[in-house]
Every structure is written in C-alpha cells, then in structure tokens.
Image (cartoon, rainbow, N blue to C red; front, side):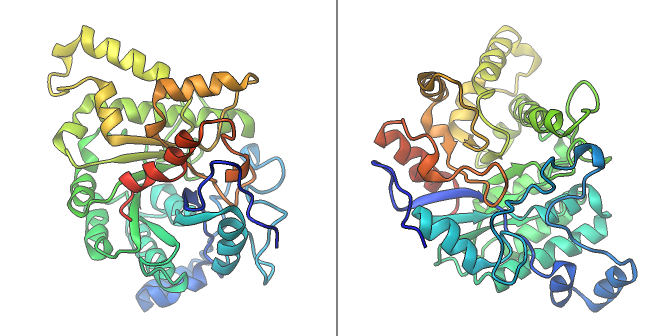
Amino acid sequence: MNEPSRQPGQQPDIIDCDVHPVIRGGIRALYDYMPTAWSKRFQAKSTELVSVAPLTLRFQHPNGSALRQDVHAPDGGPAGSDPTQVRQHLMVENGIGCALLNCLQPGALAAALSGPEESAVLCTASNDFFLDQWDLTGSGPLRLAMSVPVQDPEAAASEIRRIGSNPAIAAISLPLLNILMGNRYYHPIYAAAQEYGLPILVHVTGADCIYQGAPVAAGGWPENYNERYVDLSQIGEANLVSLVFSGVLERFPGLKVMFVEYGFAWAVPLLWRMDRTWRSLRHETPWVLKSPFDYVRDRIRFTTQPLDEPERRGELEQLIAMLGPDLLLYSSDYPHWDNDMPGETLRTLPAETRRMIFADNARKILRL
C-alpha cells in the first residue's frame, strides 16, 4: 500500500463528509433487516438495487459508470462495497480519521424509485444493514448519515426517533423531492432532526432531473450527461433560498443543513442577491428576522466537492475568503469518478484554513 498522501499543513485527523458505500449483495442483503412479507414482495417484483440510480441512455455516464473503475472490492464487487477496503484505500492511505457514510441507493429509492410504503421499509433496512454490517459503533472511524423515507414525513420522523440516539448516526440524509425545503411539508422531519441534534444532509440522488417526483433543474430537460451534471447546482441554490425566505431557520432554531455535492462557488453571488432583496422588501417576509448572510453563517454548510477551480489559483482563494472558510466541509465523494482526494485538494490554502475545512468545521456541525 502507498504511504498516506499528505501535504504540509494537512492534519491526520481529516473528516470526510461524503463517502458513498454500496450495499453489497444488492437487495438480498437487506432481506434479513425487513419483515418477511416485505422481502417476499420484493422477490415477487424481481426488485433489484443498483450502485447508483438507473439512468436513461440520455444521462448514462459517458464512461459507463459513476463509480471509479480502477477500484474494486476484494471479491470483485464495485468500489465502496467492502468496508475494509474503504477504510484502507480511502482513509488509511489519505490520513482520514473519520468518514461520513451516505448511501445513495436508499436515497434514490426514497425520493422517486419506490412507493412511500416501500421506501420506508427500504430505508429502515438500509440503516440497520450499515449499522450491523459496517460495524458502526460510534467509537470507530465511520459514521452514518441515516436515510429517511421522504415521501412520508411522519414515517421519516419516526425513523429518526427509532435510531437517532445511536452514537454511530452523525447526520440525516434527506433525499429531496420536487418540493422546496422551505415548504412546511418537511416540518416533521426538521422537528425530529432538531430534537436529536442531527444536521440535515441534502445530496443529489441520481434521480434528480430524470424521474417524476425528484427535483428538476430550471429551464427544461437537459440533453446529455454534461448538461445535467452542471445544472444540478441549481437545485442547491433554489433550496437554500427557500430555507431562508420561508422562515424555516427561524421556526427551527436548532436546525443545521449541509449542502453536499452541489458545489459552493454559486453561494457568494446568490447571498448578495438574497441580502439585497431581503433589505429592499423586508415586509414581504417579516418572519425572516436576520440577514440571509447571518442565517447561512450560523446554520448552513457546503462541501468542497465538486471543486470548481478557476485557471488562476488565487481567484479560488479569494472566493473562499468571501464566502468564509468556516462554511466549508471537506468531502471526497469517494468512490465516484470525480472524487477529490485530500492530498490534491485546496493545496495552496494556508494551513489554518485547511485545518478548518478538513476537520474543525465538521466537528461543529456533525454529531460526533
């Protein structure tokens, strides 16, 4: 094995806020974690899980898969399906001390690829599978962003209350619907998240812009993978605006939200516009008691991946300074094709800034 790839100023206790495990064995691996009647139902339907949401030909990855093709589990399975390999290949070799697991398979199912009752069973089974099979105890290097069945907010809240006190749970992965996050539809989920001190993590699921019920980008249907990949940041922008102007962050003062894999370069000009609009038309949203800047600084965080890097390195540093390095969380997006390993990410930043982004900020928002 290679020695850990660390740069000067990089700390060995890096916290990776977005790692995507794959359910080894597909849906059959979940049968032991669900009622027999449900496992028989899924068998009768010939239900199967895939490593990411099934895509139409239009949006199929140009290289055949979003997963890295140079990494495989020891049994030949896809990258991310073996916990020992993830710990060695991602964490040990890169000086990562803690990784937040966020499985996209139940996320896509909960958002659009299954019915409400089915999604509740699958999310519960998936959460129990990872807690058991990945040896998540709350004292090791791995933590779980638990999945919730978003099509039924009360069921999602019940799932949070079922396992939310488990120390291995560090966040709640909320797969989005085509309902903006400020809508009162999500209030039961936010109330439960606040009750357990868990941040809400939102992330693209693979169903976005493709399946009915999942979020869509503005302006119409993209024509190819590249268009859709770039357009996905629009979903993050729209939901951030909704969270602030709806008053959700005022109604739930303990709620914190992580925007994961939507990028962050768009946040600065968006906040300028939000603040100007709020100051000009405060009577339109009187329940928004503070500047959007204040809400975001206190309660919202963005992950670094995918990292949009300008040709001139200093411009990225300026952008991060304008946003505030305390709002950023390191994420690798392992084992996806565009993952960012810590030794090759944000290398030119000062050591103190890197320490904030790669570890300190995550400690303040995740329940570790």
